[in-house]
Image 1 (cartoon, rainbow, N blue to C red):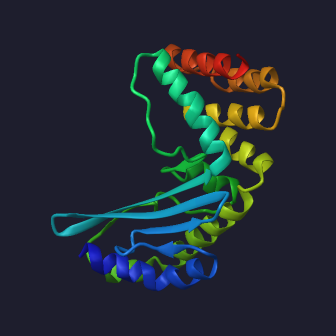
Image 2 (cartoon, rainbow, N blue to C red):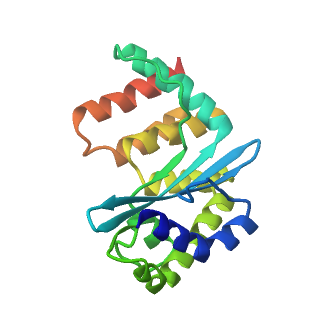
Image 3 (cartoon, rainbow, N blue to C red):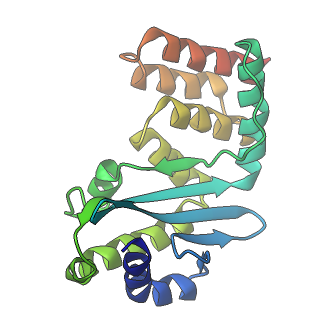
Length: 208
């Protein structure tokens, strides 16, 4: 049933995504926008589970210049902690839970990114939700190319990972890293200690 569901999703969202530069993979589970400066991945992660299927919608936006800088300092931090360096790219914004993003865009959809299907017909019943998510994915691809807007989203979505990305943008733009770290400290004041230490260690690497 997985393949049938992905084909049905493609019949709903494919034309709009293609028109806006997103190209599907062969499995129709990933729609990728890619140019010399940016990449956006819109993912429909559908898995067979017994007689039903489970869907998880995800989104990643990558600023390729930011990716290089973040990777450099992230690997320095990993070495400092005695961990192996990693060569894969680091998206600037990772969306696996859409609550904050939907709220920011005043979209009233609850939990649809996690969805269980018993049959393909149920996909059609959710056509409008797929179209809303598709429009949002396209809007994010366009808006997040502006680093000032990207910073807003990183702070809205503030995981420790996103806060380090936020500091990297300040580094790239020659902005005050001290001021950026003050923002990060305020947001992360209730984090567990090892995450706060990672943020401080990352900041120290940026200002070396």
